[in-house]
Amino acid sequence: TIAAAQAREVHIALLSRLKCFRDVPRVHEETCGYQKPLKQSKHFANASQVVTKCFMIADSREIAACRRETSFWDARTWSLQRLFVMFVLIQILIFSFVASYACFGVIAKMRKKDHNRGEIRHIKELERMCDVHTYPHIDPQLEETVRSMPKDLVIMHFVNDAFLPFMFSWICNTKDMRGVHERTLVILSSNESKQEIMSTGSRVNAVTIPSLKFINKNLEFNTLGYRRLLRERIVAIQAVLTLKERVFLTEPDALWLSNLLEQNSFVNSDHDLVGFDDDNGFTGAGFMMIRRTLGSLCLWQTVLKRQTEILSRYAGMRDDTLTEDYNDQIFLNEVAGQMRASGLLTLKTMDSCDYRSGRWYKGNEWTPFFRCRGKVPHVINFNWVVGNAAKIQRAREHGHWFLEDDGKTCKPFHQTLAKAKTSFVK
Image (tube, rainbow, N blue to C red; front, top):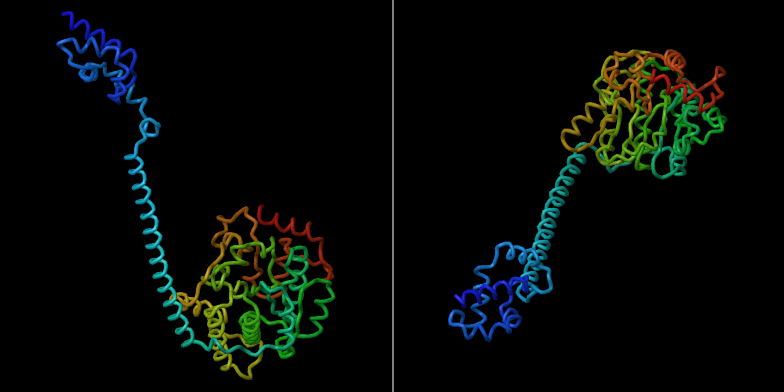
């Protein structure tokens, strides 16, 4: 009984003084005041038995508290064994990272190798289809003018005398859009037209090609003269593409509601061709960004060849003769579709709400009319109506014409542009 009472007192004393029983030598040291009397007890041989007994009967809550106070990062628990474990784990992580990097590197090289093989196959296929390494003849005046322009791209217009009113309106429409006129190339059919363009005081670059005099008249869509005009435009596209990395082919019968040079997805696309949906199952042939690649060079070479073959059937016939066979737009889309399916050409079509065809003027006959209602586009083309006079009249009615009644003077830029924008949000 006496020995049991003494053991209970020792146990209570230990629980009150010690918070953690992790280290037996330290417990020995702290309990040395009890060792001597305990040794005389026949129930407890030494202090180690006291500590063991203490662990066995200690309150579970005290043990739990002791464990919560113990942390892996506690300096008291740090040991060489844990340092070794950490070292091994770090080595495993480093090895895993190096192995993963090496694997990804091998995969990337394999993909690059496959890509290069694909490129070689495409080049061989393009060389089989076209003579892509032979450059067309370039008019010296045209070459000099293009080389003097900014290096990034050319905004190319191909205009005869009958289309000059549209050219003047477009110049007024874009005169305050930064960088546009400096990059604009207008290819004309007469020196008189060039003088008129330069008299506007704009910064556009104009060049005359004397051989185009035969197309210097009003030409209706799909007439033989119109087809001959477009053939000469393809020749000019090929020439300019040999001098510039990017050619923005456009026509002046259009309204720009924002600076298209600031539309990065259009101007700096990696695709060979970027165009707009003509709402007739085609990409519009008169409005597209062309990037100089073997694919785009081959495309235009093929279209030119087919157009030349077709037009040879009409040799000696009048320009106002109406043709019924494929025009350049149908040829272009047909050849581009075939090349795209074979992986020889990349083609992108911009959103119809931002880059609109002239079918918008027909209201809900335009397929995305309701989807685009209330949204101001970046550009709208004046197509989907026959005849220059009808185009001009329609543009005037909607506030999309930037010339005064004298046909030379520009309307106030900001007021006219603001009025034009309201026509899309009514």
